[in-house]
Length: 489
Image 1: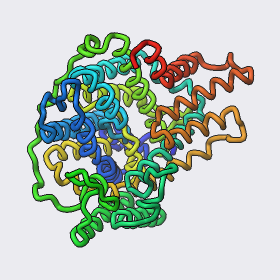
Image 2 (image 1 turned 135 degrees about the vertical axis):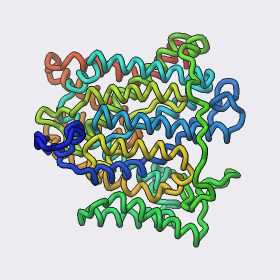
Image 3 (image 1 turned 90 degrees about the horizontal axis):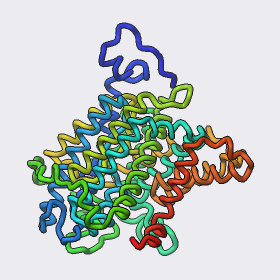
Image 4 (image 1 turned 90 degrees about the vertical axis):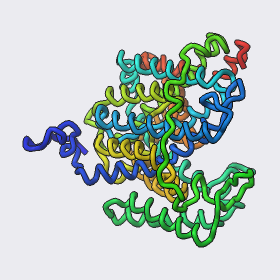
């Protein structure tokens, strides 16, 4: 969709957010903001289960406590706070419909790789340093220069790959696709079984029908309608959670949340984790080289996850200009970098742009107003976290499947008959869902493209930034053997 100049009579708010110019309305933005929140509200529950349950080198949970419940409670409040503030900042400054929250994958790296080697404060100090370095790369123009150096069809491949990535996230989180003896199985025991799977299938069919019929608020209606069905089913069938408190596994139980109205609707947030970081403590504990490699791993993932996410979302929202550029791209990158710093400073891991924002875009969001709505809902979630946890995976994930399809349509821009670009594009698309990493897909595509250009005698045409980035990705992929050679493995 081409962005046109707004009428002279529009308000200053309309002009700042390009509301009329992008063909949107306040109603669409509000609906989109709600949909994005409900699609990614799981992070308020999931991040504490990752960060709050891991121990550091001293055997302590985050915050220096030995009480896992207290640790989870503190991480929950801080996760919602940072996500809310950073998403609002993205809306106001970046003016783009993308929400920000603690990054999955990055939080696991911090919790299970860094924290066991140092204190939690030391690990979060590394996250802050990584965010500061990313911010410097943005302010110097290096990050956006890399974006412009990437071949256009590879950028579209990133968007398509992300579509498949969020599709597999939805399929796995819903329980429809599960790890099996070969690769994956279809539902528990290789068949569709259990009320949660039924709920997911109901929600998926409902959402598809609403989207095909172009019903306003289709995705939001799908999420809320499926959540109501889930609550009714749980009240009658007493399905229970997939994982019990005693460690027992119920293969046909609900994923993440049990859909029932909680006894307590409001809880006072515990913000005791804010400011608990030590910038250079890790350098003393694990050494300078190991600390630098850890920062490099965090930085490279943050760097390209956001770039890929922003382009994929802009393509889905039809916000790319005639040159394939994203409006206010520098501002988006600045806010995303600040979010990385804020996540470390609040001890919830690096915060980054979320591809689940595509669900809000699918609902019609086109401006930062949607992000402001999502951010405000995250802030509210600090106080009503028990209510946020009502929606199970099975009610939220149908939206990801449908949005994955919508993003997949960008594949029409890629010329697969031209193998020079087709093969790198294919690897970019395939490796994102198969390795569960946007960064891996982008890296494989970049490195392969450079190798092919060299092989066909076009090395001189390669932008120097693509050389730098591809070499960086080679180091990233070889980080384990490099650590082994240096005696750090």
